[in-house]
Image (tube, one colour):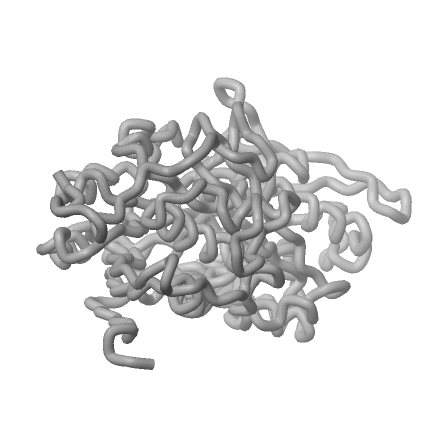
Length: 431
């Protein structure tokens, strides 16, 4: 690879979508040609505030209410969000946990009290994905309590006696016909002392603490992601044969299914990574926004309508999630495998090389660093994009924005925020 195509990684410090609502169309075309952001054939350079801006993984939204930040999503005609269908994924995780409990209730009830007790690792109480996963688990298990028409997603702290008003005890009938109570024994946001959320070490420590106090009551462990899930699995549940469920289908978690990790959810990362850069490529080329997505490009790249939805109202593309269990985990062993029908190199004569600024909010995040970024690095070559990768510390926006000192140097921007309501911290730098 020549020097002009080399990718850069800048890492400073250590440490992953909103809900597709009304107006979601499966694999739809959002209406014609894009607004070209390519200045190669003009005398005037493209203004920074007219260039492609793709938010990914953390959808611009109010971190308290989850309401989408449409001002940011409508920053310009070339602004979109790429993530996954958070509600569908959260529901799928909950259904996976429920199916497992019903099939194995007798053996799960380790102390024979007739109560299937679970603990829940909450990633970030203000993050739409975390909210959807918590709600999905509580919805499927019947432990959710509605507040203002939605299941309460707040952590309960500890609830070993079932007295919490945030959740409720539920009744399920196992596959063997016996009725059991399901109880959320404990849950908390896994935030470390530095303020980083989705923190794996904090999750492992929390489970160890819970186990020392009421370990014989813990029958199932559920986590909002695999980073926390694997920390809990390795800290306690593996040695105690307690099934642990995560989310993201990280390679280490998928491999651990052979060792007792009960299941995870793939958020179709190859589709997400491809869409993140493909939208930029299409805008820069001035072609229909769904070229190589809903319709084949000249190289034959295309994404099946079964694997994503587009919400025109939300200017958002959502990948569809897939359950990964002992029945199919071998199909997901390599989380960095490219999408089957989107692996062909674009012709550089019609899609000339362009430079993209892209940040990863937390360089230490397992899913983003071990799955998402490697996929991006494969796709940037295929799409003729030179991407400068910026790794954040997962704590402060300025740790990232301070490294966007000369936006005029780039043709497009892909943004992964620390906090979902900080979109303006980035767009303000573009004018």
